[in-house]
Image 1 (cartoon, one colour):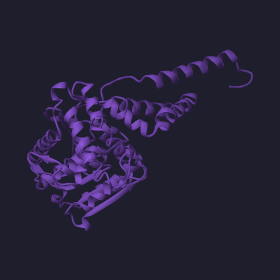
Image 2 (cartoon, helix red, strand yellow; image 1 turned 45 degrees about the horizontal axis):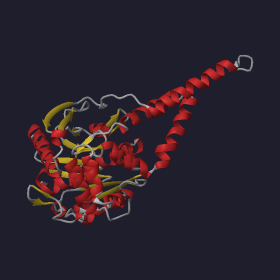
Image 3 (cartoon, helix red, strand yellow; image 1 turned 135 degrees about the vertical axis):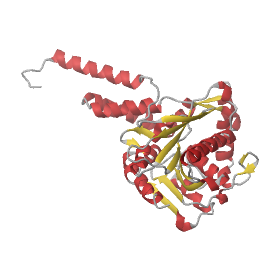
Length: 358
């Protein structure tokens, strides 16, 4: 715009339009069904589980890997978030036949499902994959909450897992301080009241609010400042990225109340992952000493939700030989470790290089 063409009324109209666009994006986002970036098929259903198969476009592979995404109030498509941020596609590039557990937002009929039920559903999924591929042992990858579930599963069924990857997961919650562990020490009655307020379900919006309150400056100020800069400069690419992330982050899922309360009590309050006897599945005590397969532990340098020490401490509680345990530290935070571009390009690529040798 030149001085000669400048018209105050046009300038003010442009500013007002941008202010309106900013407020509209800041206050409300369009709701849509969660999307997967890569073509896939649902090959098995059980209660709250859909097992998704992602056919490999690069090769006709039978080398299976099962990814367990988190169950912490968000949708599991974090494992296949976008074409350029997809753990599924990293594994595809290395020739894997990829499967992902898609844990559904639950209806009231499933409010009493507990940790045992989710491990049993995981076992059903593993057996479907083993039968489908005719491969006795598969690779198992657990992200965040899916990480401790993967560890529990491998401790119970070591004969079915060839290698285990645990990423950004609370294994020993006393290995390093974190706000989420401090919050879990609040009276159990508080968590029970949250479940009761939703008729036996745990609304993921409460969990997400808890995450936000750990970094209030980021979630209640900085992100809106960045959004305004995007709108003011007509940065359409970053606006689309912002909208895509917010649509995923702000659409919570419902969890079974029993499952949520067991996680608070057994995983966080009692540090049950490293205390055999705390967790029992089908009458069998969960003991990480039963894990002897190759183990890859992934932590995030800036992870304030699960400090890397809580993940890396797992090496002290398994039977895997030290030379078969690998620790890798991403430069990102919690979500960045799981789906950030740099983490996928460096840490997860390295993980695939190691797994292909197993």
